[in-house]
Image (cartoon, rainbow, N blue to C red; front, side):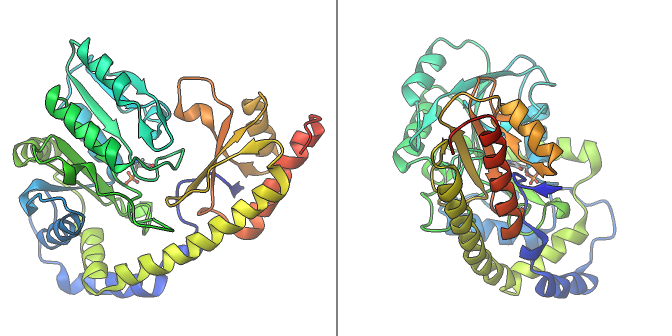
Length: 364
Ligand SMILES: Cc1ncc(COP(=O)(O)O)c(C=O)c1O
């Protein structure tokens, strides 16, 4: 199967040699033999803390919880901080709509329009004014999955203002921050929020590999303590082995080196994919050129049957992510990824989409 929409790096992008060195060093670094406090290895937490500080976020190391991926951070929040029936405000089209984590715990999902790098904060404010239930705001502000748009600094400040005024906690899922391709993105919401209403989530899934299952959540110490207690009850914390490998990878300077190489390679892939789309599909679809992250959000100009396109592509051995996965509202989009496939596969995929649309008599 050609993975033309998957949110992961192709194996060619994995820093094999340098990461192998870090894996070998784990044998020397390993020094935790009992049930620890479950919040994670202190060296990795210190490294995460430095990273957050570099990005203007001032949480201390005991305000950081290492988790088994960003997804677990979301699970802990929904189990530990929200009550049954709470409202989860989120960008109208969002990764979070593809998850069961909030719905299965009885949360009400409320979409907020997000276009041209701007969240409709007037709409959000109206909702908050009439809102009686406990609520949170979940945002993926930087190279948003799936649309790839990045919230402006202005919008980030507006969010902080509303969060303070209406006492609504913000979950900032900042998992794509380091995958900028052209310019560094605006600072995290958590760096603008001096009142400590923001929990920030990160992960090594998108920059190294999702199978490591290591991410983090940082926020006010009392909230992190509550989430850590819950984490202890669930599984006593994440395995130390991948944590130590990642710690060594960072401490050796190889992570930063890898990120620089990765950005260059992703940029080449993005440019090639955009070139293919311009050449073959510009009559039938439009897209923004992503400035970071992994995806291209392609929207068809005419109404077409996205489910049928998805299924016919699947029959051709090509997997794309249909837009309906990310929104309860109808849309004419698919999510493509320039990270998860080779250039040859990109070409095959785009030509296959073109052929299907031509067979449907759409002028491409
Ligand atoms: C926006 C966003 N948040 C969280 C996750 C989950 O990441 P992890 O592998 O760290 O659990 C993903 C994965 O696709 C994602 O796109």
